[in-house]
Length: 123
View 1 (cartoon, rainbow, N blue to C red):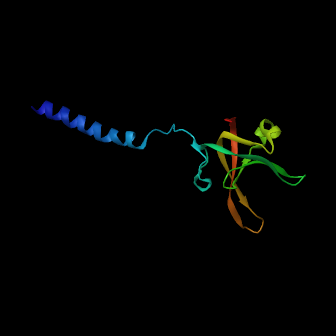
View 2: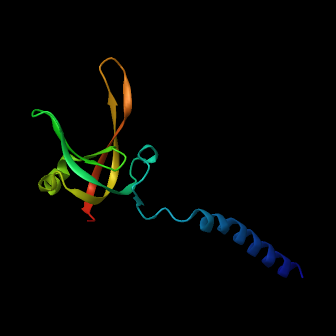
View 3: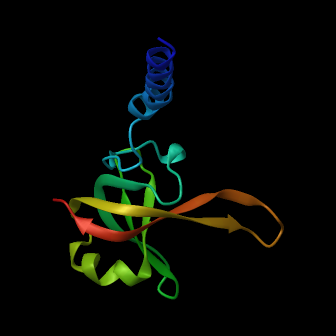
């Protein structure tokens, strides 16, 4: 009788500790489509739709994808060649987000720059 009780107790403990794994899902989740710009974290894979634009001056310019909320997602310089010919066109990209801090010389901080790396063309 004690052996059955011990086996049932172990089974109950295993079941209770395994439940959170199913409730919270795995870390290998699908990329978020058109995510909330403020909620994106470093290393998140996202799917973003918008227009590819060139911003800045002739000396210092960047390629960005501007989404429907008018938020700019910067394209990593290493990925720039892939998208340079798509300037002023609507597109959908899957990419990993890197957050680059923006801080002025006077100490003023702005929200982090969202830089897209590991870009794959979705549409």
